[in-house]
Every structure is written in C-alpha cells, then in structure tokens.
Length: 301
Length: 275
Image (cartoon, rainbow over all chains, first blue to last red; front, side, top):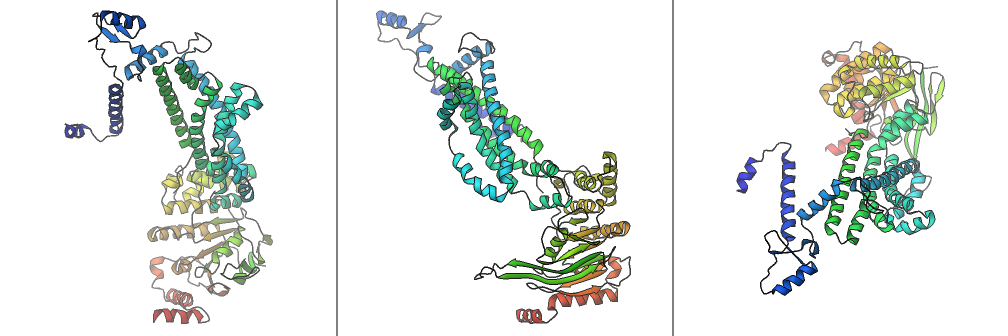
C-alpha cells in the first residue's frame, strides 16, 4: 500500500507540502489516540453510586440515556477535538471585551504584536546604530566585544526585576524585556558584518572619492546587510521567546498571558490553543521578515 | 618632467622571519625609478613576490611608499582618487548593485556637474563600448568572469582618469575570453587616449598590449632590472604576431630573464632543481 502511495505522489513543487499535510494528519491521529476519553463502564456500580457520580458531575447522561465520563472533569490532556471546540469558541468573537482580563483572541494577538514590534524595532535600530560604530574600527571592536559577548547569553528575563524596579510600569517593562532580548545578537552581528566588509569594496569607495555619508549608505550598509539581517533573525527568535513569559510574569494582556489565564482556569484546551496561536503568529512574522531580508541582501559571486 | 614619475620608490615591511628582532626590515623592492609618458601603455612583469602589485597599490594610494613617491601630472599622489582608476584582479564590483549602477557611481562622482540624465547617457555609452548593453541591469552574480571584468573596465574608463592602473586584470578569466577583452581594452585605450600601467605575469599579454615592459628582478630586495621597448607596429593582431620574428625575439628575451634572472643567481637554482 505504501508503495502505491509513493508512486502516486508526483515530484512537483507541491509534494513537500502534501507530505506536510500527511505528517499533520499522523500527528493529530497520535494526539487523539493518546488523549481519547476512556469509555465509562457502569458495570458493578449501583443506581445510587451512579446518581451520586452524576450529581458530582463526574459523569453525564448522553442522548440515549446511558452514562459518559464528563469531558470537562477529566484529568487528561484534551484531544484535538476539544482544542478545536475551544478555538472555534474563541474565534467566534475575536474582538470582544467581556471583562477586565477576558478580551477576544484578536485583541490579545494585537497587544502582543504591538509590544513585540515596539521592543524589537527599537532594539534593532539601536543595535544596528551601535553595531556599525563598534564595527567600524578594529580598536573599538576589540574593546567592546567582551561586553557584548558577556551580555549576549544573559536571559532577557533576568533583566526583568531590574527593569520593573527602575521603570515602575509593567507595560514598559515588558517592552524593554523584548528590547533586551533583541539587542545583543543584532549588535554583535552588525559589528561583525561591518568589520569584515571586503577590502575591495572600501578600496573602490575611496577610489571614487565617496563622501562619508554616501559611502555609508551605498557601500557599508548594503555590504553588511546580510550579517545585519542574520542578526535580526536571531534577535527575532529570542524576542518572541521572551515576550510570552514576560506577559505571564507581569500580567500584561496578550497571547502569552492568555496561556496563563487558561491555566488558572484549569482550561488545558485553552492553554494548547494559546500555544498554537503563539506558533502561528511567530510563523507569519518570521515569514514576513525573511521576505523583507531577501530584498536587502545580495548573493556573492 | 614626465606625466607620471615613479620616483625612487622603496617598500619596506617589518620582518616577519622567525627569529627576527624588532626593527628588522624586510625590503620588498628598492629604489624603483621610471616614468610613463601621457598616452603610453606600460606593463610590469615579474615573479610573484617581486612587489609589482604592491607598487601598483602605492600608485593607487591604497598603500604607502616607505621611501620615494609618485608624481602624477606634476602633483604628488598620496590618497586614492578618481584620477587613478584601478581595474582589480578580483573585479571588485559591488554585488548589490547592477552593472549599470557599478559604473554609474564612478560617473556621478567623476562628473559632479552631470544631471541624472547625463550620468545615465555617459554610463550607457561606456557599457556599450564594452559590449555590455544587455547586461546593464544584471547584478555581478548573474555575469560571467569576463563580463564582470568588462564592467570593471567600463567603470575605470568612464571616470576618465589621468591614469589607468590594471592589476593582473585578466588573471581570473579563461583564455578564450581573455583574448577578446584584451582587444576591447586596446580599442578603448586608443579611443580614449588613456595612459595605462598594467601589472601582469603573462608575457604574451604584455607584448600584445604594451609600448614598454618593465621587468622586476626577484624579491626580496627586488629591483627594476630592465625596461624593454616593444617596437612592433600597431595594430598588433594576435594570430599574425606569433610568426613575427621581432615578437619571438622579445618574447624569448623576457622569458630568459624570467627563468634565468639577470645576474644568474636564480639560473643556478633552476639548474639544480632540474638535475
């Protein structure tokens, strides 16, 4: 059967995506089989026992009058069906505000995006600016590099107490946690890119007597662009990782906080839904960034 | 006073020999002294390590002379500038710019009075002269080695420099393409009445193109050994050149020098290796 299947899959450009769909199907199948609700077996239980269990909400009656385990009271991980139910429920009114902490999923994604983009863009601008200064001179590069290397591996969340103490505002603290997460990789890569620009390009720019400004925009920035964008991609990942726990710890509304609220509600299906939302948002942002990067980078030789 | 004067130039590096003390010197070449007249095509030939590319870099302003200096059109040159355009062995095109943009940047810098339209026309004129119209909007990564060096030549000529400096310009180009680009270079040189200094280690190329060939002895402590006048009348055609007795004579003279060296020291070494 497998052979037949393989034969039918044509090797066109869509076949990898077809394979992705198959993988998704298999994963969903494994997930649902691992989390299937065990059938309630009333054998050996008296009428009184059943009545007590029904009153406790452990079991519910189905349409035919038999008993089923109450899916809301099970201590198992919810299956794909229940997560889908939660998702459809959440997506019904994505921009509704029904309570202080109960905002629609669309709004929550918006809050997280705003916080994320603000911190990330601010950090990218600052990091590219200082990266270019650091990279433009061998002496400055050597002097600053140990500090960047020291600060780069520090988890951005480690900065949070200090930031909260000095900024005294949870919203801005969460923005600056994202900022700290996006700063060092971009700065280190920019400095590296600028300090390793091919000698030939600099020679040509001095030969045609480019002014400092023109040299900066027509030679240095484009020559270092591949390194700069590589740094921004790394920063992007670490900022996305940082924004979720920052929201959780600071209680700032967003998709990260959604996961925490659902946990507090013991709504595990909601937690899984939040995870999927974070994944999808990250995927779309990263795709957009790579599209953007390909417009500004060049291929050597 | 000549148009270009290479005035007793010496290049010394601090010695990197094992066991060298601080202050020990490594002399690449010493007391190189010659001149080039306006409109001349002069080549320099010599083995690797004789410092010919270093001398070209000093002329371009990328490197500094330890002693002596370069005087172009009555002025000493120290920094790189638009009056001395270099054609690099590695092409040195900016990969994020199209062929057109790579040339246009030199045009707009060398002709600041040009309007945008004039820059475009001037750039296209030089691209056409190098047969590059179809490649104008392509980036270097889309061009062959030969096409890239044509862009490099167009960039250098388009700036109308006082002096063209060619640093082994055809070393990375396959032999068949090399021939046609050499012919294009000759045509451009004649059309623009440029003054050219070329570094090479290809004897045939040097004879085909040059008015004079400067020969460097082996480094370290290299010296300008001899300048050979190429009195073969132009236009020189490669296929006919091979049978020209004067060509054979000059070629043998240069090859003997390159293999044997002037003072016979290297000749002994070569013999030792052969036996």
